[in-house]
Image 1 (cartoon, rainbow, N blue to C red):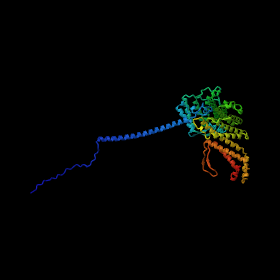
Image 2 (cartoon, rainbow, N blue to C red):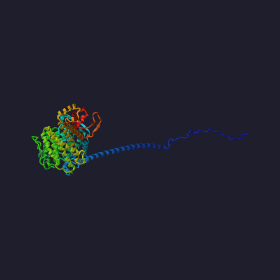
Image 3 (cartoon, rainbow, N blue to C red):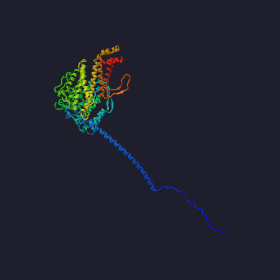
Image 4 (tube, rainbow, N blue to C red):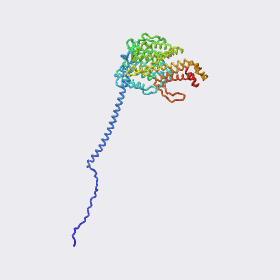
Length: 600
């Protein structure tokens, strides 16, 4: 019997769709949202780039503004310092307690007058130009070469005139040969800036005296009634004087001739009041005399000696001294009436004119006239019997100035007397007096007293010029005295002594004393004078700090010293005397004999 079981039918399963168990959707957001996201990403990148660029530009602009502001502040700060400190010394006449000494009138201002600085009427551009000219003139700007052909000029700086010995020209200059010179570029730039300031001042309406005719006669041509043209604004006068001063320092023939014309242009405007006695202040009279001295010095430097004498004579005529005439050598040997009552600025201007005129007479073989004029100048420099102990710095500077000029005139007079007669007994004593006075002045102003370090005082630039002149004069006095001492030694005596030394190679101390001790002592005195001359020349040039070099055989030390032609001249004389002393002592005959003779 069959059992009944349920019948199980096996059915073939249907094919299931093949689907991955894990499938990553193409996007987790709807398609529209995905596109917006991409746009946002691109927008964010652009904004970031622009933001980065803007920040960079902002930093650059801030840096540029900062650098520009710093530069502007520094630029204007420098001009402020120059205005208040560099140009702070007053100029023109001062009615204060020190006005009687006239130092303000001698200081060349930069149009600011008694207040110093520059004149506000000139405007922004002109005042900045003047400050730039001051910077270029005082601090320099390198050097540029220029060639002079066939022109004769002196190498004197405008303030060096008559500060050393005698005004003269070099042999090459007198021959008219071309001389290659180096002109400080700072002076050339300063000249350009002063020209700019003059043009701006004319635009502002400042009155300038008209330029003089090129066909005018040489020498002073002013009428007795005075100059008929406009006198000119004081600031305009200062600008012209600044222009002339820069041209002097450039020191080419053309620049010196141009400076002379500018000085005459100013002098023609000032002379009208000076020609009327009693109508001008002492400072104004002294200014006219100083300008006459400058014009004369420029004439001498460019070779016009006759015209120079005319200008010096015209300037001295204001105090009653007449050196011009048919016989130039006839000079009064005593000061004019009232010389003791000359105001300090007029007295200084008179001495400057006498110094220049007498030096010119000496170089033109008018030695007798030169000696008389120099003796006349010394009578003006006689100090008063009593000088007050407590004086102002301006008064002390005046008396120191007179002492220095006294030493200079004594130097000139001793040289002229020696030229007239080599055996003149007054030459060496005069030089001794001159040396004493020069050393006194050098001791007083070197180092510079603190009273003359204030740049806001007109005495400061005057004291600096006096210190330099004192060193120059002191060096020239020592050099001249050394020359005269050297020439007092008989060449025959020196030669015979040098020939006798080998024979007495075994002398004792007593026998060595027979080798003409007077000649040796004189040469050693000349040696000391030449050493002093070189030392003062180094001090004046700023090269007094010696740099020691390596030692060489036969030398104690090698030293790099000296600067300039003057030092070279003094050093050559020193080496010459050293050679004579070595020859007299017999170099190589034994150190013992040498030391024994030195003791004599």
